Length: 276
Ligand code: DGL
Image (tube, rainbow, N blue to C red; front, side, top):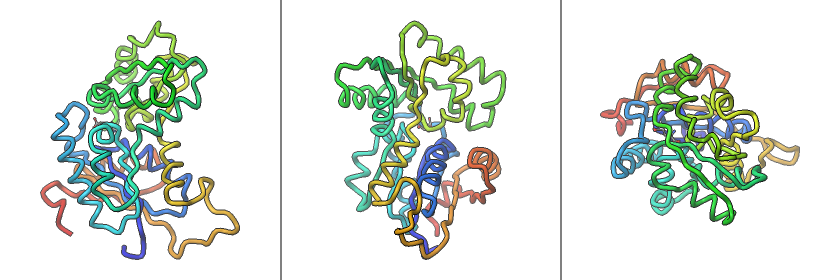
């Protein structure tokens, strides 16, 4: 384990896998240490104090490993703790909101941008502020979608129930004339086909995963397209470790489907989080 220096990725559950997959694609030589707090997911409807306490427990857990960067792959946690985490940790800490806003600004042609996220993310208006900061004359509309995360966490994203729920929840976006929609929750890319179907083909969906991974790459001084002939090969092949505070099998099922390769997942119940 000490042979590797990991990029730590944390989320309330499986959502951060959407960011992990992109980090693996852009930085194939890097080792990933993932922690999903599935036992306490969803975070999105919790009080900020609770989200802060839980997030720092995750950070404390991953900090026990040799890590060289931390990705807060959860919009809700990013909105609540990113600045404090940056102050407390002596390594690069990357959130998902600023990269998501930047990606949306890079795509929109009409400056009419929608944001969907958890109740907390939408309540903080973090995306709207980030979008406005990058492009002051833009219109940003936020919509909370509290039913989406439970659908993904329980692996029901391919069901008719999910399709109906997505359609019903996104109905308020109709008539707003948006051309871009930010998936402001890392769980939502797993529902992307249903979301696209509900909003129609004219709206471009934005996931912050790609831009976040590019930011990790920039901060670590790497190359976004993997290895180049002049770049030294890593001493050890990458190793990916997955931990969950919840059920390992259910996490594994979703992780393997999303990542496309077999993974081993270790369950770390909350009461044993700090034991090595
Ligand atoms: N995946 C998380 C996010 O990006 C939060 C989901 C939740 O726990 O509510 O906001």
